[in-house]
Image 1 (cartoon, rainbow, N blue to C red):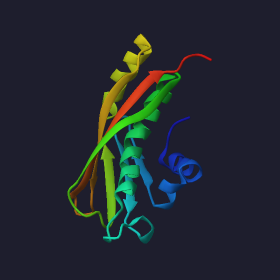
Image 2 (tube, one colour):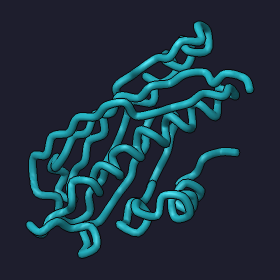
Image 3 (cartoon, one colour):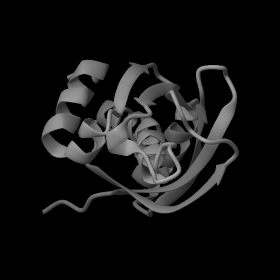
Length: 153
C-alpha cells in the first residue's frame, strides 16, 4: 500500500489524535522529502500567543517518521524504528501557518541496508526545518532514529 498524505492524516486522526486535533497535516511525500504544515490556533498556542513547542515537535517528527515508515515499507522487512534523541532550536515566534520540511530520505537507505545485512541496530540523524509564511525559519529539529531488524517470533 502506497503512503499518501490523506492516508497518513486519517491514521493520525485515529492513532495520533493529539497531532490531528492540533492541526498537524501531511501535505506531500516523495522518495526523499516530506512536508507537514500546522497553523497557529487557540488549541495549539502557548501563553505567549505563539505555537507551543511540542506541537512544532510533532509536526517536525512526523516529517522524518513518514519518510522512515515509507522506506521500511519499501524494504519488505520487519524493521523497528524509534526516536532515541532529539535536538531543537527556536529562532522566531511560530505564528500563522508553519511548514516543516525534511529532505533526508536519502539517508535512510544506508541505515536500513546495514541493519538488514548485519542484524545490528543502526542510527541516523534527520533534520526538519520549520518556516513561516514569509519563508523565515522559526525552528529546526534534529531527530536521531534507531532502526533494527525485528527478530522472528
